[in-house]
Amino acid sequence: MKKILLFVATILFTTIGFSQAYDGAGDLKFQIGINAQSNGTGITGTLDYGIGQNFSVGASSAYMLGVNELINVPFVDKFDIKIRANANIGDVFKLAENADIYPGLNLSLKNFGGHLGGRYFFTDGFGVFAEFYTPIAKYNDDLTPSEEFHNQFAINLGASFNF
Image (cartoon, rainbow, N blue to C red; front, side, top):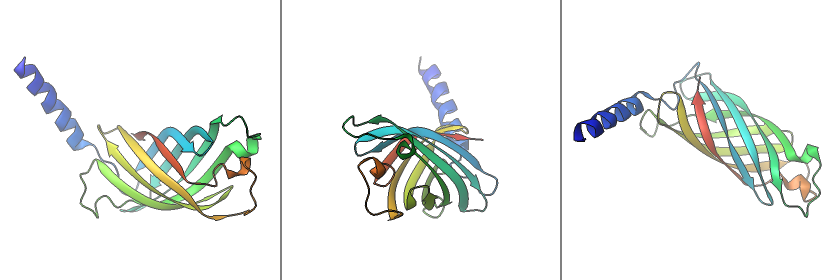
């Protein structure tokens, strides 16, 4: 039994050692997860493409599914799409190759904002991520309750995939 556990642990740690959270130019990451905001939750997806050693660009989208029933929310307020740029600085902080931190900026249908995220890969193709998002400048300051979606602090959690 000890030999089997040792073998499994060796394979697991070897696999983890070969995973990379950000690999520079040409790196392609897809993430999908939950988006949590005040008065609602939804799904989010991102696609990031590495264009330099520490820089990536991409797009993200979110759609609100669980909405507080007291708020009448039209489709246009439930949906948002963003273009984004990230500074992938895991190597700057000397993190393990399977971990990355990425602050970034994004321009969406609703606002101009910023995010701080992190990824941790268990294998070469699969990991987890967490992002914290906040708007910096809203296009409209007089928002209805339904327009507050995607115009407030949000947390994204989910799975990250290497392509």
